[in-house]
Image (cartoon, rainbow, N blue to C red; front, side, top):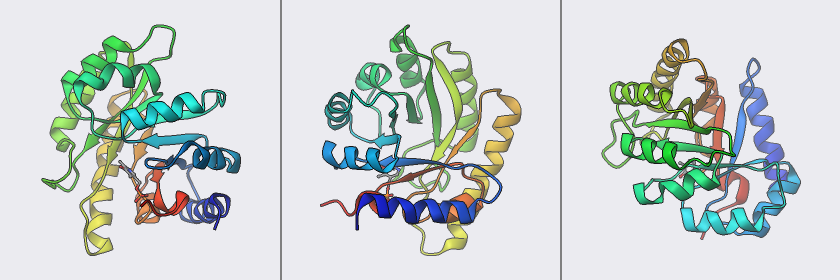
Amino acid sequence: MSISSHLKNIQHKIKSHSPYHEVRLIGVSKYHNENKLKEAYQAGIRNFGESYLQEALTKISALSDFKDIVWHFIGPIQSKKSKQIAENFDWVQSVSREKVALKLNNSRPQNLNPLNVLVQVNISNDSEKSGLSIEEAEALALKITNLQRLRLRGIMCIPANYENDLQIANDFNKMKQFYDHLQSRFKHVDTLSMGMSQDFTLAIEQGSNMVRIGSSLFGKRY
Ligand SMILES: *Cc1c(COP(=O)(O)O)cnc(C)c1O
C-alpha cells in the first residue's frame, strides 16, 4: 500500500478516537530516504520526526524547497550536537538534560523563532529508556521557561514495551495528569506528545494531542 493510503487509514483512526480534540500527526521518517519523504509530503504530511542528526541533515537540505515542513528532532541528544539541532530543527522533543537545554538556547539563531521544546519523561521508569521522572521533568521545565530562545511546549514519552493495554493506558494517563498540571503552571504549554504506530489510539483516548507514527505510515524498515 502507498503512503497516501496508509495516511488515510491513520487519519481515520485518529478522528474516530478524538471526537473532541485536535491531534497533530508527526511522520517519523528515520531510515527512509528523501523520495519517501517527498511522497509523504505529497500525501499531506507537513511534520517530520527524525532521530539521527546526520541522516536528518541530509534530508532537511534535500527538502529545503518545501518551506512549510516542520522538523522535529526526537532522538537521543549528544550535547556536542546541540548546536546543529538548534540551527536546523523547529522542535526538539527529547530534551532531558539542563546542559543540553542551555546549549540549544545559546545556539538558536536570532533570525529564527524560539525553538519549541518538549521534555522527555520516562513514564514507565524503564532503565532502557531515556527521559526524566515527573519530579525531575518539572524542575527542568521550570528552567527551560527562563531561557529566552526556547519555548516550553510540553512533554513527550515512550512507554515500556508492556504486554497489555491496561498498563500502557495507565502510563498515558499519568502523563496526561502531569501535562494538565504543567499547563496550569506555564503559559505556552499546549503539547502532549505520546503514541506511536502500536499504541496511538490508546494514547489519544488518554488525551494525547501529538502522535509520532513511523512504520504504519512509511512501511517496515529494513
Ligand atoms: C521511531 C520512533 C517513533 C515511531 O515508531 P513507530 O513504532 O515506527 O511508529 C516514534 N517516536 C520515537 C521517539 C521514535 O524513535
